[in-house]
Amino acid sequence: MTVAFAFLAGMTLVSALGVVLSRSVVHSALFMSGSFLGISGFFVMLNAPALAAFQVLIYVGAVTVVILFGIMFTQRPQVRRYRTIINRQFWAGFLVAAGVGAFLAYVLSAEDWGGTKPGNGPRQVAAFGRDLLGVSQGAEVFTLLFEVASVLLLVAVVAAIVVSRRKMGQGIDRGVRE
Amino acid sequence: METFLHLLEIEPIRLIISFAAVLFLVLNLAAVLTMAERKVSGYIHLRYGPNRVGPRGLLQPAADVFKLFTKENVSPGRSDLWVFLGAPIAMFIPAALVWVVVPFAPDAVVADINVAVLFFVAITSIGALGVVMAGYGSRSAFSLLGALRGAAQMISYEVPLILSLLGVVMLSGSLSLVDIVKAQGDTIWTWYFLPQLPMFVTFYIAGLAEVKRVPFDLPEGESEIVGGFMVEYSGMTWALIQAAEFASMAVMSSITVTLFLGGWQPPLPFLDLGNFNWVWFGIKTALIMFTLQWIRWSVPRLRMDQLMDLGWKVLVPITLIWLFVTAGAMLIF
Image (tube, rainbow over all chains, first blue to last red; front, top):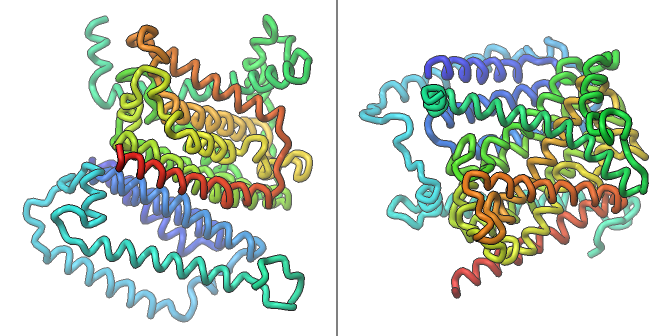
């Protein structure tokens, strides 16, 4: 268990460092998928296979691929210099990161975790789904969040159409005319 | 012998040995499918196909593997070496990993996880990453074009693929492939391909696009971009990409069989073979794989816009409508 944890933590951290420090944007995106895979490994260790599958499906399978797709469409392969990576905002960024880290460490260590053990959550997928949709006894706030997220996606889709549509009388109009 | 058999039931040993067996199966399947592909193409073209090595050319896979092992592994001078070499691995591992949740016979499954359908969808979605890596790592225009086509195609067809699974999940009320197979019963007319016929067809077509086989082989596009994302590969790396392609084709067939065609269930109750029901699983999977090869030599390649139209304007609406029909039918009956 400890060995697996050390392996996953090392994989996540090294990949995360790779995202920040690698000189090519494509390498950063690939390192990011490694980091996401490490996190899904943590979910498996915590007896939450559904969350692990969602992590892989959404972050590795969709987000990273779309990011790579965008990079390859918009730029030619190029190399960043370390001067641009470690720029003038180094100390400000370092302070913010250290502050957030210290705050999280304080909150998480001050919290009384009591008898919490990995795997105590609802492992049944059906119960998990009911909790998420608010039809069980628990809090119903997740239904609202679910709907808000879908509205956000709708806005994004409409925005994509508006941005990508050609204006009238500009270039070849191959899209749908209003 | 008894103690040895008991040893096989202890948990980590069972998992490791069964996973090694599945990996062995996948690698050999890829070799055999390569020969099957050439033989089927031969008979469809009214010729013999490979017939020099062994009786009727049956030992051709061994010769192919030996040739590929001894070939030099060339990489382009300007290639991004780590990405270039990592891409075949990133394509092969997902294709081999999905076999972990496929039930071969009653109680014969490597890992019966309760979210197996989700696992299948998640793992297949990584495959696009390997294609993008291969295209970028090669640093060649044809590779990049192929990879862009591949990524666009695989992301688009994941939508109808996932939506067409939902009908089966609704009918069986479970995300575990073992439960889904059990719920389908041992007669041919209780399998899910009849009540879910539009979903079955959609899943089959989307699966065909997901494994990049012929009417949807734009990422490879031999006649226009000379092999697409795999144009720079040679020797073992090329063999690994081919193995990944054939393994994912076999995975897609086996998942089609598991979800819609009753998995290891016999077609009629008196044909039940007990523990040997894997024979039924094998026969059905082989039939589906044969139809995939049949299509390859019968249907011309789609254009990019036709591909996107088929995915978004035909398959997605069909699955959405049939989801409503299924939900309504479940509400009434």
